[in-house]
Image 1 (tube, rainbow, N blue to C red):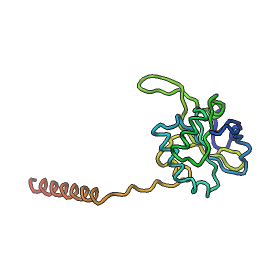
Image 2: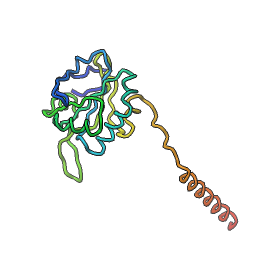
Image 3: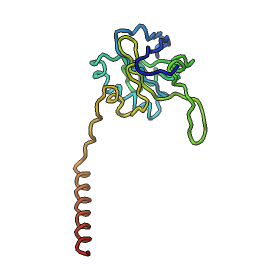
Image 4: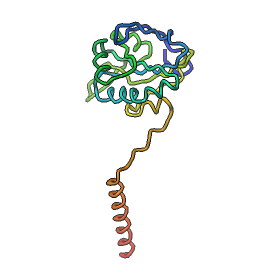
Length: 183
């Protein structure tokens, strides 16, 4: 079954990093960010987890419970949580039970080689257990902004960058002036 907003989120029970079972239906009454990621302690997955960690209080303030899902083991999740000081639970979907229900175990391709792996997708589930939104193009560094529907903060320019921009503008203006005189 293809999942889409408005459908009931498939229920599941799987262990978290501490071996404690987590059942989605037991979280009714809370909004859930169910995010799927490929592998603990890889660059993109770490960026995504750290963005959620750094904005965890804002997510909680909005009533969200954050659950990360990968096919890594409980032990791998424990190391990842300890290293990155993650405040939320990671689910060890080693048997791909959740992945199959959410259609996130997909064929991927890298350097012409095809293989099966986790699609980086996030499901926003409301208090009634219904999918409100599916984020398929995850911006790992600004994922919280995508969840809370905020525009990512504009990148600050340093004085050095401003000086370079100013110099470039000046050079372009001079070139235009010279080109006009030649006509």
